[in-house]
Length: 140
Image 1 (cartoon, rainbow, N blue to C red):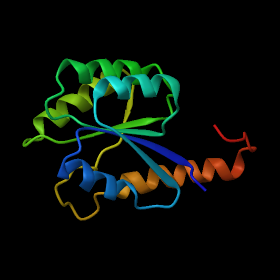
Image 2 (cartoon, one colour; image 1 turned 90 degrees about the vertical axis):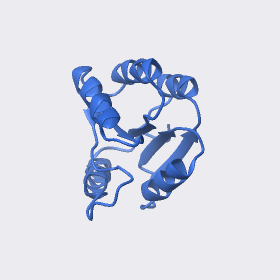
Image 3 (cartoon, rainbow, N blue to C red; image 1 turned 60 degrees about the vertical axis):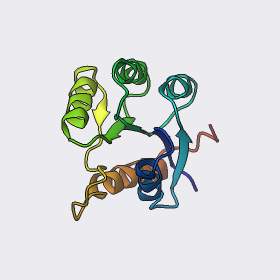
């Protein structure tokens, strides 16, 4: 049963492929991928995603537009960032998202950290607990 819809945004690079495999750690997670930021902005406008994961490398102003678009969606959803050779771009994106009121899911970087998926797993478990006590709403 899929409970968590994830949108992974970024060019098809080894980084994105690696991130896709990290996100697919649980049968309750469905990962959709899109290569460009404009398509991602349109998708978050029309579909609900529990998590949007964005490769921030080279996005600039388009990233801010996506964050603004996503901030108008569900407050229960989270956004996560990865990419770039330094963490400065990721930290800047996280700050922009927090300023816009978007929940940030941390710990999804590509650098090995031991418990890098802990926050992701906790978020998935939280959604699963809510789904087990909430009445069935059908597929959406």
